[in-house]
Picture 1: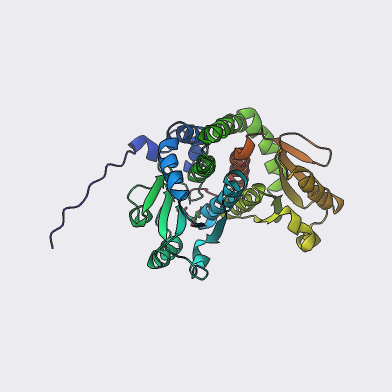
Picture 2: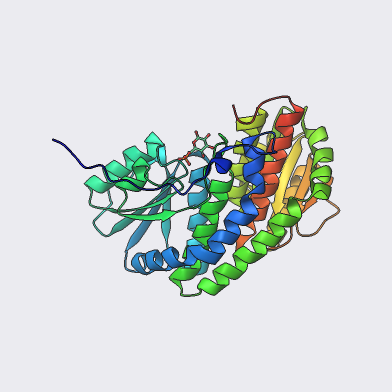
Length: 352
Ligand code: BG6
């Protein structure tokens, strides 16, 4: 049957899909992040408040994604709980299909994906729809399969992400989840304030002086075979994302884990000189996390503290200015740069 195709204009211009004066797409996309966050803080609130008002009426919320996007789901769980006192179930795309039998018509599934084409997510969304759940897509590509399948959509608005490892789209996911959490308690302004702090903190990380500092650390890590990354609360998904970035582009084995889990086994692998990256934002997780860093230090670990203030237990220290509940954003940017320069030092290509 003849059909009349629905045309949508992609507001992407050619410049956005070229490297410009960057060596790799990944670096260009890392440096676009302050603008991505600022844009979301400035204009994202419109679509976010509407969606938040809808979410208020739902009974249960599930977040699902793959890889980096799945860590946005874990961060969303913490943000919705801490800020909006809403319970969220999180699943990874390839597993969701095995534990969604209790979805009902009152369920909301937040499907998170940069490309909107990841099959594991699309499969889960199809099963969820078959059970009558409403699908909200948090997606970066207008017109993608997930965008079209979803009942409601939030366009991340990060612009085309060419790099294989997700950077600015992930930051855009986190920025929207921060806003959503605050919008659920009608405190959108607090969300915008947190994002504004995150922009400043991110900009201070993306300075030449700070990159030089990071390079010294990279030179120490580049020959290591194993790197451990720990965090608690919102720094737990940050630790997972840091490990994934290191693995997927620099090919060093890295393991991200909840800091409290260290003593239940993994600590056995920490020996003299094992690099241990510890996220220590200025929040309620600080002292417990510092204790975990001391445990690693006691076993000879090389402690890399990522925090708003230094500490004697650190062998290396990367400063991250506080951004309230959005501190996960600048913390992740440090992780991206670390993985990026480890890859350069080890002679690999981030974009391939
Ligand atoms: C993987 C990428 O293939 O897919 C990850 O290497 C990405 O970086 C994951 O996070 C999910 O992709 P998307 O497009 O669904 O966010």
